[in-house]
Image (cartoon, rainbow, N blue to C red; front, side, top):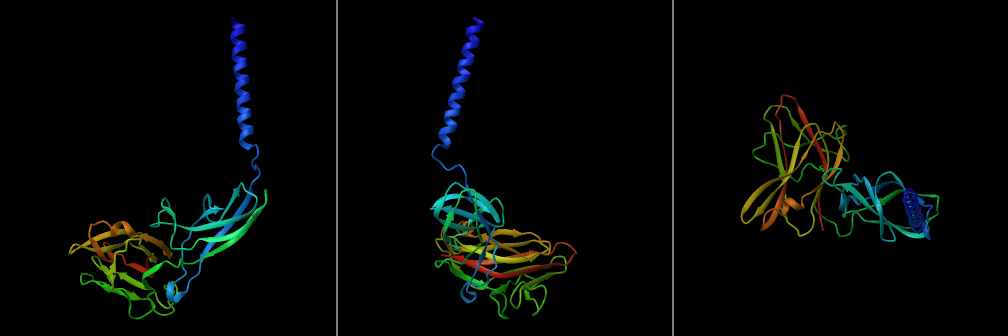
Length: 292
């Protein structure tokens, strides 16, 4: 009796091993098992400065497609395996951190996809190096402010005690160009508050605000939305201190702009208030408001 039971268990295990072996063989039969490798260093942006403004960017990722099949999203620089060989079409979508948050990585639809023909060889690495993109032809620049002119398109509100100024020519505080915007809050209770000079129609498509900033205090960015004769103040993002480094951010305004039914127009605002006895400084540059 014990022998029969042992024999039954032995046969069952043998059958299970055969099934596993068969499954393993079927998984790889007829398929490429040695991958080729693809390496991407980074993605840069080129622009026509007069129509598109600065080429400053913060592209962190590559969304990689081969023959329109998504291979994956990779933080740059990246080297990754591809189970394909021979001639193919590589398509790369530039990726960013929406609202500066690592958990909300997206392909940025205002940047052109990058397409090129490639030849993949198993167990070999194809290094495509530094790729280049620009803004799509359908991108509409609702507002561009590089803060290089004496007359800027930001209006200080009456409630503010501090106005935005321009860094001196040649100042090490300037990011690029002739000037950057500078705000210095040096007394408790000092407030900075300004809005875009223009009022913009709320489009039916996505709206993003691009901005370079270097701050050692918090600054709020938001929108004033006009809907049914009422103006609503909607904070969207609080920028945190950057440890004396310039950063680039892409802020999605779309949800805020569609908060109220009947919303028609909006303006962008910037706000900060000094709450300590320390002196704090805000530097901003290269404001862009984009839609389609």
